[in-house]
Image 1 (cartoon, rainbow, N blue to C red):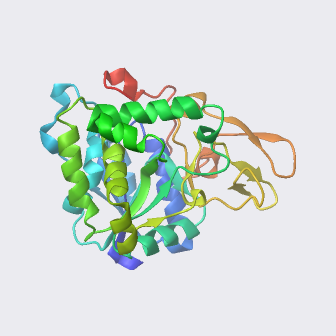
Image 2: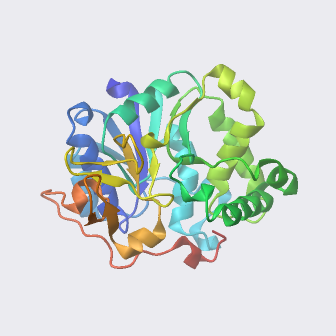
Length: 318
């Protein structure tokens, strides 16, 4: 991979504790000791930025894209979502950009290798929220489809809501794209059009999904790669299990394969701080599912906020 690939993310003071875990989950692996990491600064403290620079993390200050601004009522999290589509501008010169949300971390390097290899095929490597464990398949499947229908309708219109309400979500909290992919500009255009309607926090992910589904055959032919759920495990869809013998988090059902990236994408779980995780060998264990269970053993200590701000509090649709 070398310096032709950079791992990208975004972070503010509130989320620094989680992002610190992501950085350490990269740097403390042999394969990640020299890989480039780039982050857009959404309001970190000078001490936090200094620690990142010590970890050889490149920091850039993003602007507000698409003519939006905080003074217009858009919260900083919205700035982060829109900045991720413009990382080529903030961190130029890479062949592959591998985005990982600040609330995710790398447990096993196989996932990184798959994302980068998939991106090098020319379009994108990304993971659909599809797994036999995920609750969107079962008891809450109806409400999940209603949620998707509303998102598509609000952002792109009733026609697309009817067309894609039964499709899976392509999760863009973790993805890799080559600098030359056609998807960058196409999604940029879809976001611009969606923002003319009533903006909500799913505008970036929904626009990615729409572009992929509308041109699915083209993208498959040109090399898009849909990776397995073990490459981006969505903890809001299903808690992983813990394998005490292997000392790692695994998928909930046999064969209990090791998970590559753990994505703690659940406001409820973050607020609760921890949960009961079933152990493969029997019983349960209270875990917070962060890297090293949040015991980073770093010279620069960080703590998880007592209460995280929820995006809904900003007054925009979730």
